[in-house]
Image (cartoon, rainbow, N blue to C red; front, side, top):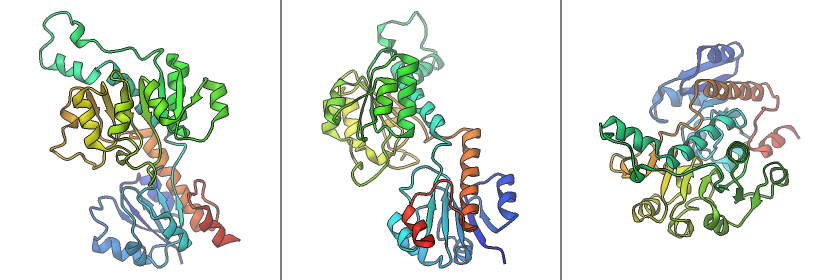
Length: 328
């Protein structure tokens, strides 16, 4: 008898065909709620779960007694109770590597867009306000040669740093990461305590994972330590930032601008001032949102779940302890 997989969120036809060749697939491309009766019924028989964006709770796991593995179509795993999954010997897989370069592109796009005021001045032209040669009121600032402060220097952080150091001649500082001697040699990166980095950097780019320690890592005290000319870029998770503190810092001129791809609540509430602020570039969480990368992420998730349900080690395994519990 074929094992069963419950897939939620949209997959390409070739991914569904690949799964259906060896497994029975229950597919929910437009799942609005984990309480959907058909979804919960499928979950009760599922050996594997594939998808993204759905918070997985212990109560939901209670309704999935046969579950062996979850393949998330994401690199972030803050929607998953990792300790609880490990306790139940459920493998959790994600999709690192395949989205690294694309997400770094997004981060550097935000650096460029905020520094050169791309969105603000494109709107200036669109409104018909460009009636004469621009003056200092419309000037941006250079990116090349400025100091890039990376808060977090994992795969994505390192890729952003390479773009800055090798492409734009930017001195690189980093914090909130273990020492990276190989990147120090390659890029000339220098490790700093966070407070020191904030005081020195012209651009502060955040790429840390969301954990208890990084929640609200950036608040009023951190923005106050930055240069008034500094630009803040967040491509990590929205809850790394105390948003009211960021808004206050932008309004008071404590920092010059912010480029944001992630927010505490997504989609942004209608009353959020962030997208209406001239010195903010706000994107709808597009970090990995290209045709090629989303296809690669889905493929990695499909490969992960197939390997897990065949008893093989997944390519991208988050909770090693669950694997050892099954196979030692």
